[in-house]
Length: 500
Length: 106
Image (cartoon, rainbow over all chains, first blue to last red):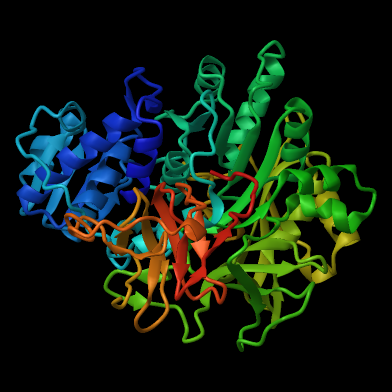
């Protein structure tokens, strides 16, 4: 809230947010003033949480800052979940002040300890009756955001992000008021994703205009980027794939104003990023790696790294194009084996991270940070000799075949290097002889015909024979969630059926 | 001067400057702006009747959005309102802390 007050003082009349779906916007002064008034309303309701269940719109920053102002954690929920799942999550955060789509107000508002209003009413302040006392808590230990993780296994966990984590991330990585008058950021990641929260905070502290795209389509993204002369944007890999495909069909589109394009949240295929750098030659690309529990980005592959990697003939340097770069200043990284021993360059293990922005805390479960401050990410990876971090999927995804640990990512990289393969996923399936066996699902390039034996021979040429998929299924597409995460569980289940 | 807590807001007694504490050392901290002890922000009147002038030796000023650290890095504050006075801890001027220029990722 403090950060917003500073920016509002510096650029009161600058446009802060524009809802790309209807053109509605707020200046920084309006955002600050509105957030304090809504904070008073939320306080008066007696709610302990400010919950938002809706697409990205002006209500998102309003709820985030009103919550901070009222000293009430902001809880953005995934509107794509089923009604039962949504009600179960709301039950966990009552008493709640709920800002949601008009169509949901009556049903959810009938729940115990839930005070529901429509986003439209909240933004337009139809309900405003309170005036704010003018004091907000400055306690860095206060919880700023509760974010439900996507929950790859079982019940979603609520990650706790305190003001100290978010402020540490912002102060460490963003120069106050650094944005130019005409700068604009296009935000298309959903508001219940850490990247959506980080994008709001970073843009606000830099004084940048944010254009929101609630429902992603490549065409809508390009239209808004052109209309608002967008200078910076963040996308997940699947979005970038579609944007680049669309741009190739519309060579007349001019995006030369797009200075920086960052991506993250999933594995970026080498071919896509190479193509993107050709199609958008004026744009600086950055790959950001982070987790909800680490207040977003902890490692970055910057624009210069991209250029050097693409231009290099040295395979070690070139490979860095699919790395996630180096840790941010203030963030330390280690790779450890199952026994907790720190591993050297080139050795695969679990990624551990330490730094002030790292929360590592879940509601009701406490902190999983060890006594020395290290957080186990459950992501598998390795560092190269130059300190570049390569992700190898989730630690839980490692395939244990006959006592040997195999990384799906390593095998996927080889499959993706085959000229006929557009996308690939490798998982472990039960195997009587080996305990677990390697299975793959691949997607062919348009018009290409894949022969499974040839693909197996291709993998064998590059990797040890234990890594050759014993089963390869050719699919139309792979299952991804809306934030670009491969749904490995789904792949696994389908491939198990296929094997049976 | 009393103990400082992270998140605390302090205002200058001699100019418009205001800071937020980012990290604070243990124990009592003597933090000054323009040579005069800083007071908790929002406390009306600041130094009361006695008007204090800025010490000319400590009048470089502070800039909004900049972070200032003590030499031993035990104290770090964020300037949230600009002022003409310079910050000091125990009589030693605080240093400007650079934000590392990072590729923008969000």
